[in-house]
Length: 240
Image (spheres, one colour):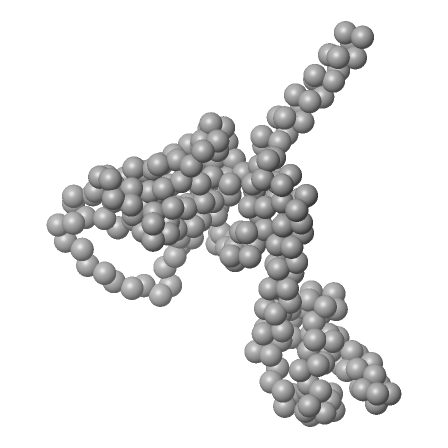
C-alpha cells in the first residue's frame, strides 16, 4: 500500500513539474512614481515574444518561470525581470525609473529598416497574437490556470473562443486571397461568373492545399490548386 501511494505521489509530482514548465500568462502594471505608464516595450528575451503596456499601464504576456523579461522605453531605464513561480499567482507591479540622461536631449529619428532583430535585442521576429488569440489562450488551462481553464471548459467559453480564432483566420485568408488575385482574375482565368466569385472564395478557403499555399506565399502552387477547385465549383453552380 505504501509503495502504491509512493508511486502516485511521484506521478503527481512529475505532472506538477511538467505543468510548471508550460507557458502561463504573466500579467501586471507598469508604473513610475505612482503614475501608470503606457506603451512600455515588454520583451520576453527567453521566448522571443513581446507586447506593450496598455493605456492604463496593464500588460500580459506568455511566459514561464525562469524567463527573462525586459521592460524599456525611450525615457525610462531598462529593467530586467527574471520570472519566478510566485510571480504568476497575482498581477505584478513593475516600477521603472526615469532615465535623466535621455531627457536632456531627445531626437526622434525614424529608421524604416531597423527593428528589434537588427538591434540584437532578439534573434528573430517574435510571433504576435491577435486579440481573439489572446482571449482564447486566456480561457485555456495553459493561459488562465486550472481554475479559469476548468470554468471556461465547463461553460463552453474556451470552445467559443477557439471558434472565434478559426473564424478570424478564415476571414484573414479570404482577405489575403483577394489581395493576391482580383475578381477579374477568377472570371478570366477560371471562367467563374462574376456573381459567383465571392462564393468561390468561400468554397476554396478551407481547402488544406489552399491554406498551405497561402502560408508559403507560393502563388504558383496556389493558382494550380485553385484551377482544380474551379472546375469542381463550375460544375456545382451549373447543376444548380
